Amino acid sequence: MTSDDLSAAAAGSWTLGDLTVNRIGFGAMRLPQFGRALETGAVPRDRDRAVGVLRRAVELGVNHIDTAAFYFSALRSANELINRALSPYRDDIVIATKVGPGRDPSGEWLDHAGPGQLRGQVEENLRQLGRDHLDLVNLRVLGTAPVAERFGVLAELREAGLIRHLGLSNVTPEHLAEGARHRSGWPGPCTGGRTCWPSPAPGTPPTSRPTWLRARCGCRRRSWRCWRGFTGRAGSSEGVRGQRRHST
Image (tube, rainbow, N blue to C red; front, side):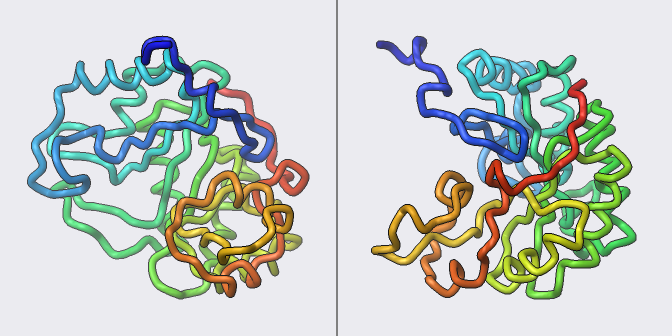
């Protein structure tokens, strides 16, 4: 078997709320530029080449793409490249994006978005991606401040039909515990969790680990305290009540 014969489906699939995606996805952070991601002076990538990479990834079975409006270089935006390459989107393509951080046109980082700014960030992602809803929006968290108010704003946008599922990114054990406490109060539990869902301590029985965390955890931190702090099954198929939205 050659690399041309391989498909992302060969690695299996997992559930993201009511969606099923292949485990191997595509991260778009470095798509707009060469070199290190999110650098203000990064050299923009050739547009046609970037579009070709995205289309080839989908041909090879990738149906889950991670992006953000703040993934851009001087001339290229990851969201707009995705739009150009894949629109009109196939029904099985799942786009996950992030809100919270922001960058000005020069690439410098802005203050983290508060509750009043999150709707604008969601609408920016919708516009750039050319979609009428977002499959998954992760609230990217910086620091240790509570997330309930900000997450509540996103939950309202989900009720309005702009978001299908919600998640958390770069979270602490306290944020996980907060999410667990609020699962019944928000319109639905969070579906996703990125980058800092902690790994279990060595020796933790696999059967005791929440389904979605076993499948998705990518953080190298290892702390049993982190696992004890979250008892809900955020993102497991039996724990998600996200509303269905038709793909565009």
